[in-house]
Image 1: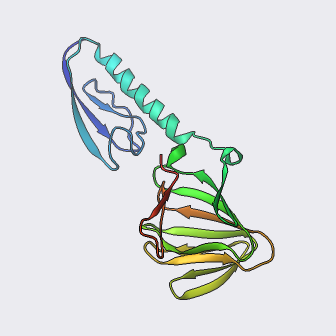
Image 2 (image 1 turned 45 degrees about the vertical axis):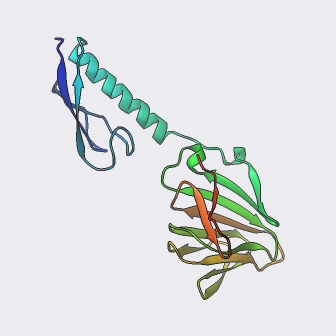
Image 3 (image 1 turned 90 degrees about the horizontal axis):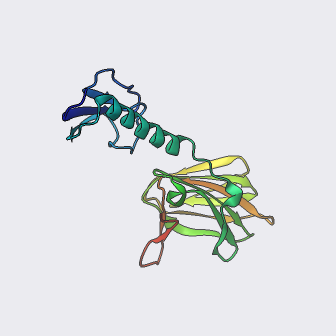
Length: 197
């Protein structure tokens, strides 16, 4: 059967393909693929002589490609470069907008004794974890010493920082709720932005 048709595409992350030739549902449509998050409908006018079955197969194919690109992206951390962030601090961005992230970035830092991150803030939440070493960390006027296996949650817009208290290298792991690293440092006119796609 061939005909010009108006097809109703309804998408939700866990919907399955409808059996109706006039109502197509994308198989496991992913957030950001064809539709914004949540449940919505999209009316598409196909002025085509292609069989409806062929149109169904194309929609399923698009969904499968999107699903594969998002769910099976593998990033090798050792392939990501280590960058000198400032004197005594090296950073490796593991996951960010530059390699496909859409909602967060994950990075690690190696910090020489007596150095660290000066007071700054982000527009999003951050989690800092000490992997090795000893760090003094602060949020506003509150200070604490963290050692390996401890994390601190930093709310959005709160001024914070850290420094290496020990005599050995400090290794820190960080998760920022943005795919782009952006920080506003005390005394700086503009925010610092890194790893922009």
